[in-house]
Amino acid sequence: MRIEVAKRVAMVAVIPILLAVILATPSLMGRPSVLSAIPALIIGVTENEVVIDVHGAVDHYRYRSIYLHLQGEDNLSFHQSLEKLQAYDLDVSFDRNATAAFDLYVLIADRQGNTFALNGTVFTGHDDSGDYVAMTDRDTMWTVVSRAPSDFRALIPKGEPK
Image 1 (spheres, helix red, strand yellow):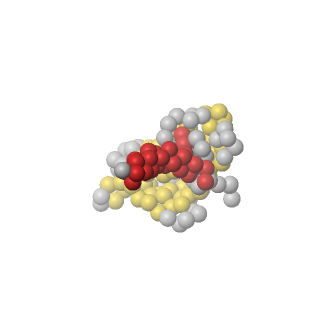
Image 2 (cartoon, rainbow, N blue to C red; image 1 turned 120 degrees about the vertical axis):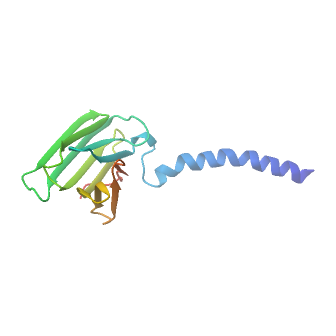
Image 3 (cartoon, rainbow, N blue to C red; image 1 turned 90 degrees about the vertical axis):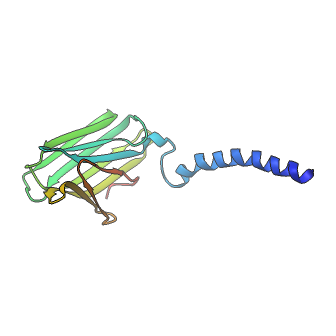
């Protein structure tokens, strides 16, 4: 009888312990305690445009600042720099013919003082399988290819600009 009671007490005690671990883990991993503050990057292609969107991955979140810089690789005259302060997201689109490859740099500051940075090279194009977007993260040299109608999606990692 005592063993049955001990088992039931242990099962009830496990629930708050697991809840505490779930809530503590993001801050231990260096992520913001506000889960909605983790930013995401989406890059998509339409028939005529490349569309880039930076926003909160989980929910709407107002960032202190969002900075996005694009620099053409095959067309060095193509460059765009955008910055929004106290904004929920940042969107930009441009003609697909402007450049097929471009460097992308994103720097975001949330309201808790955390920064998020992503530095990569993006390739857009068309092959036998259709339209595609490929991005190589310069920190990890990891390349991901997404084919239309899917978009390239990635979380922007926490870190200081390099």
